[in-house]
Image 1 (cartoon, rainbow, N blue to C red):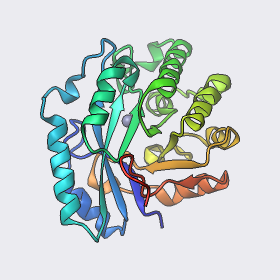
Image 2 (image 1 turned 45 degrees about the horizontal axis):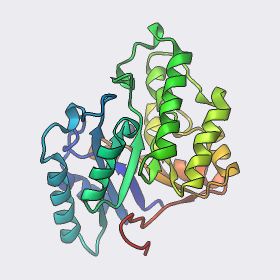
Image 3 (image 1 turned 180 degrees about the vertical axis):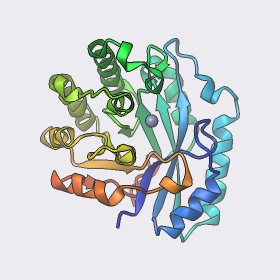
Image 4 (image 1 turned 180 degrees about the horizontal axis):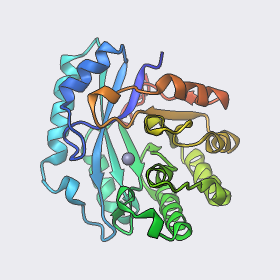
Length: 265
Ligand SMILES: [Zn+2]
């Protein structure tokens, strides 16, 4: 049984509903050894924070609550302090400042908003898919080249939203750039995330697909981080057993006990 969930959103994230304590309780009941909170922090293309994090005490409040719960639940579960930062490529300096100002265990990098529009908000029937995918991958490439993070979240996220509108997108068609991104992760000592949210939405594969997982292994990848991307308690650790099969099929391992600020135990 998988014992870690490295991608969980609590009610600090505007798009999630359950408080951290409730989520930790659920994780304990599932016998998880670690739960990593990765609430959202979004940048826009002009380098300013998006509305998700407009209040100055947004991050300090997350930090306080995680550390309080970590102490309280010590010996039962490790409550990890993470953050999912969107669009780091537009705010390199600001991202670094955030990452270095708090005792984060884990930073997820994402690209949610292409041209400042969330991928969940596109009308895919009216969108030039080829150019959207191109711009999306160029952004991921910049993030992978330069940003300070630990794991690249849901690399083929764009397909999850298009699928809801009956449009199938496969970033695998752009093999060259996808492989470049994967190679950069390996070269820079960063990881690829395996995200199980797609399994809750009628996909048979995780994000990323098996094909991309195989490329990651071929490019020298060894470890992946595993996350449910839950935005509510009921989804914590969902799909993990299924994901483990996809990961093991390519000889990959799941990262555990990762702490960017201390030695790995
Ligand atoms: Zn995300």
